[in-house]
Length: 473
Image (cartoon, rainbow, N blue to C red; front, side, top):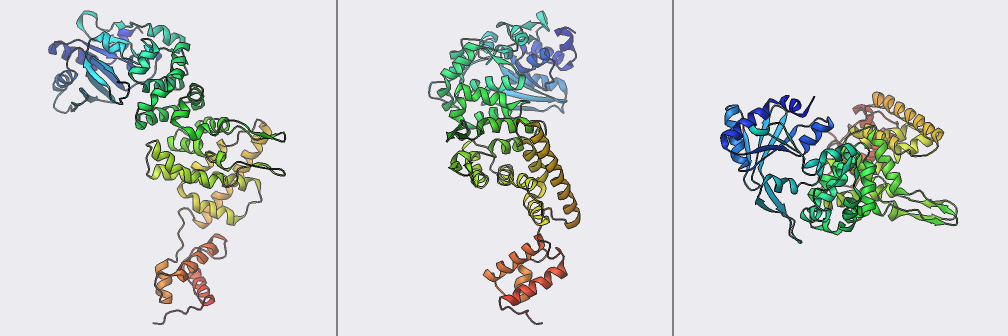
C-alpha cells in the first residue's frame, strides 16, 4: 500500500482538505502521525499545520462535521483541537519558534511551511503529507527523514546546537524517542546534547518529568537512562540516581553497582507491568543506599534501613520533580518501604505472624509489591534466580491462604478506640492507645480472631492488667 492509499483509509483527511480549500489556506499533516504511518505504528494524534489560521481552519472543519463536533480553542497558543472518533486532531498555523538564552517560554511568530519544518526537533518528525488539491497525499521530506527512519537514526533537521538552543527540551525528547523507538542518536546530535546539557536548566521540571515518564514507560527503559547518564543530562535532572552509580572496594570487597542494578530491576519489571508508578517504585527502591552505605570488617558492605530512609526521600523527590503528591506518591513510598519484606520472608522460616503483618501493611498493593520483589532478583546465577522465584511462589501461596482465612486485607481491628473509651469510661488517653495496640498485636499474632466477642473479652482482660474496670450500666 502506497502513502496515498494509506491516507485514503482516513476519511477525515479528505474533509480537512475540503475545509482548507474553502478557507483558502494550505494544509499539511506534519510530524508524529506521518512518522508512525511509515513505521506502521498506531497513532491517534494528528497534527495539522496550515499556512494561515489553524483556529479558523478547525472551526470551518467543525462546521462541516455537524453540530455534535466541538472545537477546543487555545488562543494563547494559537491552536485548536477536534476529536473525530478515536482521533485527536490539533490545528496550528505554520510558525517559527525559539527561546531566548534565559527564557523558558518560546518566542512564536507566523511562518511558512519551511519555517515550521525547520523548527521541528528531528528529521523523522519533520515529515509532512500535503492535503492540497495540486499534490494531495504527496510526502514532503526536506531533511531525508525517510532515510533516517530506515537507518533507525535520530538526527536534527538543522545543526544540532541550533535545534537544542531553540528548545533545550529537545535533548530529552531525543533520548525519549531513542528509547521508545529503539533508535540510535546520530553522533553529532548526541555530542551536542552532551555539550549543551546545562541548557536543560531553563526548561520547567514539569516538561522534563513528562519526557522522563515516557522514557520510563518505554519497552527497555534502561536504554534511555543510560543515554541520559552518558550525556550528562541525568546529573542535571536526577542527581539522587547518579549517586547510585559506582562500586567502592575496601579490603578487596566491593558492593554491586546500584545504578545498573536499579536499571536491571526497572527492565525486569517492564516484563510484569506497564504501570508508571510501579516503575517509579523500581527506580527509587534503593535510592537511599548511598546514604546508608557502611563497611564492616565482618559483614562487608551494609545498607541498613535503606528502605525506611528511601521511603522518606520519596516525597521530596516527587516534589522537586513536580510529580503528583497524592495517592500515587504514597503508593511509591509504601512499596519502597516494604520492598525487602517479601524477600526476607522468602529466605527465612515463614511464620503466620510475619505473613499477617505483610498482608496488613501492603493491603491492596500486595500484588504490585510482589511484582517489584520478583523484578529485584538480578543475580547472574540462573539457579539462584530460580530458587528465589520458587520461594516467592511459596510466599504468595501462603499469603493467599492466610488472606482467605483471616480476611486481613485493609485490616482494621473490630474493637475501635470509641468502644474502648465507652467500655472503661475513658477519654482519649495513653491507656486507650495501649489497649488498642494490644488487640491489634493479638490479632496479628493469631492469639485471637478479628471478631467482636473474642476481641471484646481480650480488651476487658487487657484493661484489668492496667487497673481499669468495665463501666457499669
